Image (tube, rainbow, N blue to C red; front, side):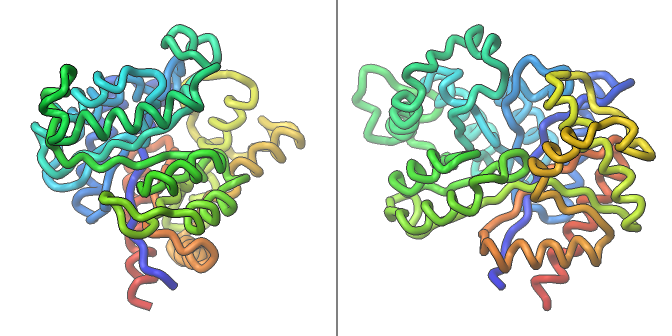
Length: 334
């Protein structure tokens, strides 16, 4: 089995009864905890118009997290690039890299991170997204290059800085693009598992080495809920299940505390829909987590596993990441 790194994806989840200030403090606490546990990176995802997620100003929040940590890489998982000017993102991440040298990642996606009406408010043009997204990536690479110093439009800060770009995807489209550009590829298996296996196959088979990367590099994002016992893990995982029921029902309210029985909340059809979306969700005690990680890695052979953990109680969320670290370490020694 191939060895793999582990990292954290944080959506800055807003919990019922808590403020957004509390959310940001919890994110910083989690980042410090992940750093102490030797997680590789801590990424934040851009979402908009959702009461349950507070990471809309992603670049600002990355700066807050990077300033409160010392060594862990901090970045975006991702910036939804067609929501923005390429120059603005180059300047923002050039500023972040200048403040925190060698620690900033720029993960890029093409989805809106929101609903259609809000996407319009962000100024997106859906008719040109598939053309615009690859062009914007090339623009970013140009703005970050030393060769752009003679251009009429320059990214200051940003120019000449080594800021790694990652292509994010939830379908096979971005797998083709990441392979063509020779960039690392991260797949959103935590909410869109259906095409993950095919996306990895496309990326590996069609990867073109580049000056940025000489061989494929794959990050798989999954959901993780670990606890001292299997029973406790399944109980606290009901916060995640409720969050996905809210997505199905188009209800964006903050994350709810655990419940004793999800059958009191979801219908059989909703349950089937949620469990399909959460196919790559690892729930259990350390032994169960270790076995599930082993099965996943034997199948997919990824370079890095990024864990998203929606747990209502912050201390239990921290403990979940400890258990994942211990399980991954035990696998590497096996």
